[in-house]
Image 1: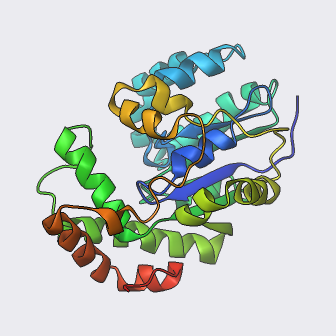
Image 2: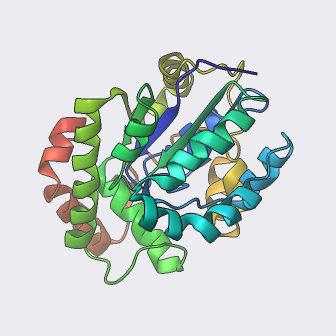
Length: 273
């Protein structure tokens, strides 16, 4: 099944609804969005649910990844290819997937080498997501305290704001170089049907109905609490959660992170109140 539909890149900051967007745009046998594969960094991180889903199409992602790991470093050194994994993905995986699907894409929360994506897929559509920095901070803090976060080192407002501001700078680069749609987490949660339709129209998504939202959380032991809260729906249960946070110290830290992200807040329309 050949397809002329655009490659999709969901360019998010962490904890801003990127998994929901990726799942909403994923529906077999129409479209598949990988969740944080890291291809731009010459990695190919896969979740078991993705391996199992794509295997139903007859595509062995694990075998491809193993093959690239064995030869990847050698290829990079000899050919000087700074995006060898993406190039191999486009040449070997995408055509095989598009025999059964109409659209492929990724969602990422780290964008240091995002330009490797647009150089490989020049016509890609980019969906940018954001969230109130106070809610990002509190959400990240909760996962950090539970030990389910990938955060390394000390967790402070200064370090969180610095990390988010850097990724935001990459979002600004995307706006200058690519065709982008901006979606705020709060708007997605409060106007789910309208915003998903807007995203589907922008990406030219071929899916007839919304994908299986909540599927990843349902199969991930570290996300059971999130699935219990939201189930398989897009809800507003975590919108403006900073307002009801009972821990005054945590709320103050979240506000400090917000104040250190002035440009981001202004760009995305978040007010200090």
